[in-house]
Length: 211
Image 1: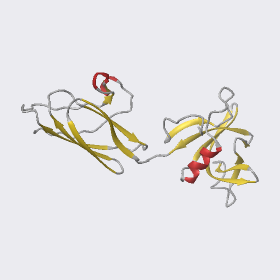
Image 2 (image 1 turned 180 degrees about the horizontal axis):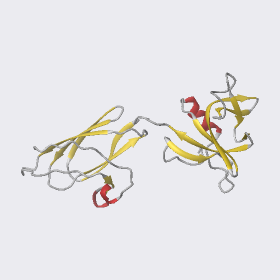
Image 3 (image 1 turned 120 degrees about the vertical axis):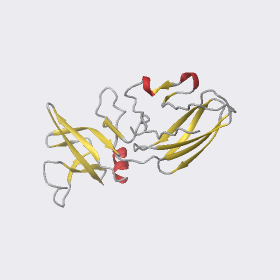
Image 4 (image 1 turned 135 degrees about the vertical axis):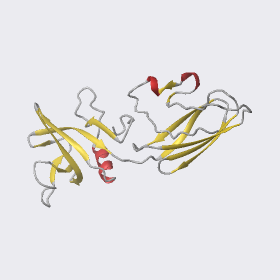
C-alpha cells in the first residue's frame, strides 16, 4: 500500500492498484511496491478486466523510460516471455482491451526472519534461543504449579516453524502430567485454539511420558 497504510502480511494477498478504487483512491498497491517485488525476484500476478471478461498475467520485470512506468509480462496467451521481446503494458493501463486493476502478491515458501518471545504471564523463569531460519528453543524453569504463558511472534515467512521446549520442575512436587495449549492472549485473556477453529494455528507435538 505504499505509504498509505501498513500491510498485515506481505507474503500472500490480493489488492487493488493505487488509484483504481474511487472509494479509496489513495490506497492500493503502487508502482514502487511492484518494483520492490520484482527487484526481490518475486513475480506479481496482474489482474485486468473489461466486464464481464477478466484475465490474469505474470508481471516479471519493468522498464522506466522517459517517465513511463512499463510492466514486462507473460500474458499466458502466447508462449514464454514474448519470444525474446517482452510483452509490455503501462502500469494501470490497458492490455488486450482490458484495464489493469489489481494484483496478487506471492512469496511462497518464505522462511521466518525471526521468532521472538514477546510476552509472558506467570511466575516461571525461562531462556529462549533463536536458531535461524525457523527454530526457537525454550527452556522453562517451573517454580509453581500455576499456568505459564509465552507469547511468540514470528516475523515474516509462511513455512512451518519448530519450537523446542524443555521444562525443569523446581516446585518440589512430583508431576504426573504436563500439557500445553496453542492459542491467543496471555493469562486471563488466553483463548485456546481449540475454541477458535479456522485461526490457522496447529502443531505437531512429540510425546514424552517421563519427567
